[in-house]
Structures are given as structure tokens and as C-alpha cells.
Length: 300
Image (cartoon, rainbow, N blue to C red; front, side, top):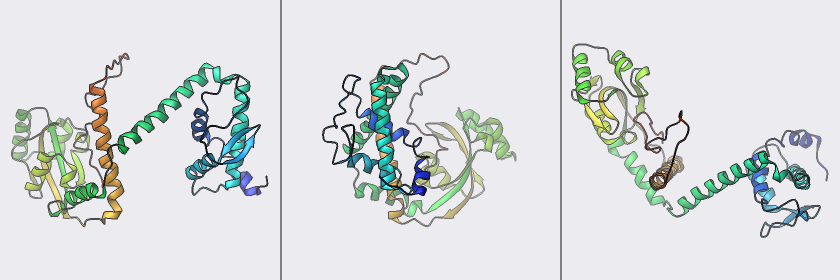
């Protein structure tokens, strides 16, 4: 098999990159044992493109590698050469009984769990398909007339209404909003003076967004705003008209957002029905791993 000097130079650096893909292909052969050294091809693994001591390298494996490194300066010939090297190393590992080494067993188990977890996610999405109409509805809701503006705001998050009322009193006396946020806010944005940056109404929880829209630029909320995160005192700093992006430019991001919600809902259900015990004293299980915070603005 011939290859250019440039290709040889490029492929020299490819072996470390192939670790993940090689492991994936390797796990596909996990039922192989040191005693089964015939290296028979996997059933239904595609059209053969090469054989190494009788073991078949398939078109499917080569195409997977091509997709993984699409855009890189690797030729098809060079990628096939790397698959052949991988197969030679795999066969040697089997002959040396490396499959029985504890470290290898652990790595294979980790890879197997990762691959099956990914397959489970794909199965969840396959059983909850999203149509263009579903995506269009979110687009219309996000970029409707009510969402044609975006806002720049700060907030101070507090545990109780009484605390929020005290902060409002301080502001009415001329208190500095950023300083009060630094000193009193329990939210992640507190050290930054409560700054939330620019966002659209659909990117914040309902009560919070409604309060921001109702305020004027430079005005703070005269009453505490309650959400599931606590009590907020909000300062609307600025607003601007938002030109809606083209549907085609954001549809994939909207789809990903909807799929994230589907996955989060499914994971919450799994966690609710599972028996989970955290045995490490320094680690705690989050009550709701899918829950977001007001600071998690979703940029569509």
C-alpha cells in the first residue's frame, strides 16, 4: 500500500487520536477471548476492505473513521493503514491475554457504559421524535411580537420576602444596587453585582420575565418577585429591539434545547424511581440535577 510523505507525516500523529474510536471498535469485539484467536469477522459488520490474519476490516469501520476526522488532512488510504495497525495491536493484546488485566477490564467496562448510555439517549430521542412543527412553535413563541425585545437587567436573590423588602427600602433611600447585590444576593451573579446581561423574556422563568418587561429602563421592582429560586429584587438597566434570526439559522439549536428538556425529564423520572446512595462524604446528590437557575440564559 503506497502513501505520500505528507500522509505518512500526518498519520504519525493520528494513533493517539484514534484511541476513542479504536476503543469503540474494540468493545464491539469484547466477546473475543484469548482462546478464540481465529479473529473471525463480526456478523453484519459491512463490506470487507482489508483482512489482517483473517480478521476483517470493514467499510463501515473505515467510514466511521472518515466521518470522525472529516475535514482533517487524512487520506482514505492513511486511515485504512491506521485501522490495520489497530487490528495488529488488538490481535497481539489478545494473544498476550491483556483482556484479563484488571486495568483493561475497567477501561472496557467504562467504555461499554459510555456507549450504552449514548445508545439509551438516542433511543429516548427516537421514541420522542420532534417535528418541524414542534420546533416552529418554539421559534414563534421565542421570537413573537412579545419577544421582539431583549433586556439587560440585574437582580438580587434573597431567601425571604422580608429580606427583599429590606433591600427595596435601602434602594429607595438611594442605596447602590450593585453594592447591595455583592453584599446580599445568594445567586451566582451576586459577586458580579447581580448582572444577568442581555436576554429575551422566554429565556427567564415566567414571573421574573414578566417583572422585567413591566419595568422601565433604570427602574427597580418596588415589590419582591417570587420564583422557585427565591425572592428577587430586579433592576432593568436597558432594553433594545431584537431582530429575529431566520428559522433555518436557529432550528438546530431549538431542537437541541427541546431534546435537552426531554432528556432532563426522563432522567428525573429515572432518578425518582432509583435507589441512589452517595457514600462519599464530600459529595452530595443534587435534589434536581435538571433544574436550571435564572442565570442560565439559553442563547438560541
